[in-house]
Amino acid sequence: AQSVTQLGSHVSVSEGALVLLRCNYSSSVPPYLFWYVQYPNQGLQLLLKYTSAATLVKGINGFEAEFKKSETSFHLTKPSAHMSDAAEYFCAVSDSGGGADGLTFGKGTHLIIQP
Amino acid sequence: DGGITQSPKYLFRKEGQNVTLSCEQNLNHDAMYWYRQDPGQGLRLIYYSQIVNDFQKGDIAEGYSVSREKKESFPLTVTSAQKNPTAFYLCASSTPGTGNYGYTFGSGTRLTVV
Image (cartoon, rainbow over all chains, first blue to last red; front, side, top):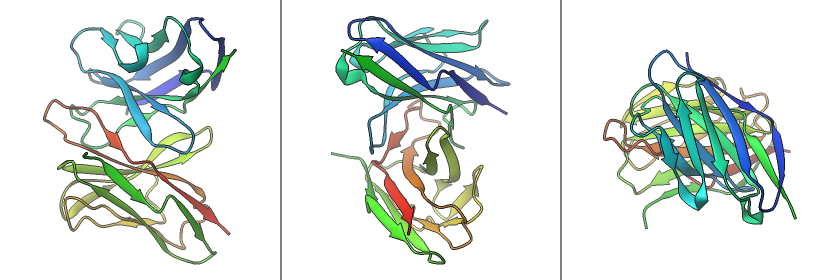
């Protein structure tokens, strides 16, 4: 069975500071990993995905994530936080290739940006 | 533009009622999914369908039912057997096996029991 752990239900950073959202996964096979962002009362938008190509993945809005097999981690980072980054972020894993049987999500991290 | 449409955006249910949430996609995706979102719980898979006229239970299927009569549509019925239905419901679709592993999500339906 696969699972995802997101460390920290709430993360607060100052505008312009580094954003680091942590995600650890467990999977019995090479995983496919995803980060999604959700704004209030909206659906989820894909930020980036790892599908066994490059270990450093660049996404939209200046975010990137690095796949580290030895640490079973896929942490999300952004060099400089912007007020518009305030949202809920979800890490997700699939071990079935195309994810035909659904993604497994972490419980989410609420990112707060302090002015 | 292609996408997923969920309706209604807000839905109120009385005790003992069945309600149906609509999900329609025009992305020509084969697979469709229903997730339930509760505060602090992340998203949990209710049902999924990889092909028309076929669907499988997810992790929390009890009290829910689905149908997949058309590729574009995957409605979810919340039955009276679901004891705690108040939640945010998200529909998603994808094209498994094509190399495009991204899921497209609808904007959600917030269901409240009154």
